[in-house]
Amino acid sequence: MVNTNLRNSFPNKSIREIEVIQKAFFVHLCDMIAESIKLFSISLEELQSRFKIVNTEILDNYYRQGRSVILVGGHYNNWEIAAMCFDSITPHHTIGIYSPLSNKFFDRKLGLSRTKYGVEIIPKRLVSKTFSTYKDKLTMTIFGADQSPTYSRYVHWTTFLNQETAVHTGTERFAVKYNYPVIFIRINKVKRGYYEGVLEVLEENPKNSRDGKITNLHTKTLEKIILEKPQYWLWSHKRWKRKKTGEERVAEINEKLHAA
Image 1: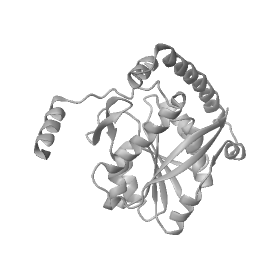
Image 2 (image 1 turned 135 degrees about the horizontal axis):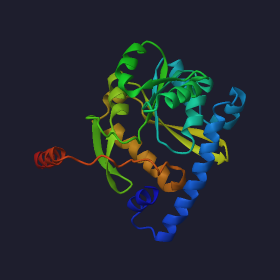
Image 3 (image 1 turned 135 degrees about the vertical axis):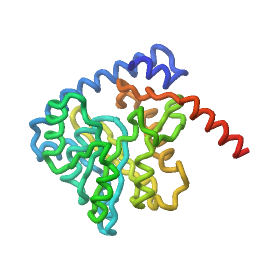
């Protein structure tokens, strides 16, 4: 899976170059596994020493304006450390959207670990209800935008890492509906076990954004980061499971013909 994903994403790289990235990825993955185990017992003080956001003033400004925000990112570097820490270092109440595990025991254990310092996690099937429930409270809702939307009908097709890719449109749909600013978070690895977050505002007023713009923005932003240091993305997940159906291809052709 890892080698296949790398070869498809970097068709112009040599076998040797792919092997170098793959080896670096597995070294990083081992670090992440050890760090994730540590998260079950880590103190808040130590957690905050291992992850910092370098430009929190972006969130502070929106909080003072009375605006909730949407934070979007990918499975790049240790997103678990970042997500677990957010509620303790940012003014907004933090909500993380997640896909429940099929194993109920591990799903519960991970849930208890992820939420012990204030972050609220919501299964993706309850996203719409959650936005409605919290519309009068200042929140920061986190979307992981690089999951494969295998069954969702809300997708946007684009090219990502040289491959035809379906992207969840949840980030854009809810940003537009509630006019919440969209902020991308880049997680940099400072050293083993230590990370920093860098925020970038992608869209300040989504209600004025044209269809597809926000989805393309966060997808291309993630792609740029991966291209810079590919070893830190999660190459082991099945990102490209979904393929276009015949119906989707016909609709695409008709759209192009209509545009012409």
